[in-house]
Length: 219
Image (cartoon, rainbow, N blue to C red):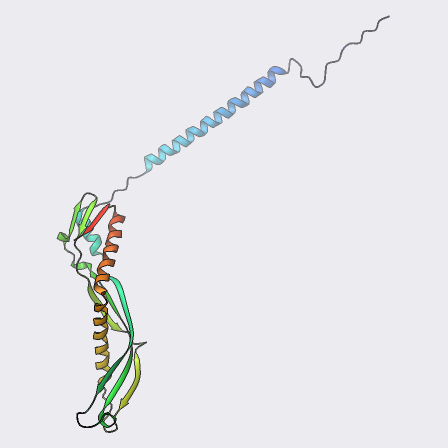
């Protein structure tokens, strides 16, 4: 007798009935991914459109009156500081008696500074010419704005007074005045005004470029 044993289906092989459901699930997942990507693109495009719609256009006034006003607001531009440390001598004597009897000599240790710059309040409307993105400026002349001694660092180094005369109370003040004048002369001799003019040009050039000018000239 021949025994026929029925074949059992393989447990790992999907049945024919389950295949359509798997295919449908994959198709749904792919469609969902495509839909989400499209939604993200739409949202991104909408954000860019809104940003462009809300963005305001920046307009800078480059008219001649505005440029003059901006420069004049700098007022007194202190562009160079010159400092000096030195010993200044002041003395008084007698044409008859020697100094150890009638002389008065003072050594003053001086620390001072000279500040130079330009007073832009003197700028006139005719000193500025605007042509589109080009501007030409006629700067006022540089000048010494401040000459002063530092009282905290300026002191009497030595004082010698003759045996027969009292100490002159005005000698120190006179020496201080002479020291200020000497400080100013030294600063001028070292070209402080030329340097102040150059620094002022650099400052105005930066200011004009920040306003949007592409060419800045001076005359």
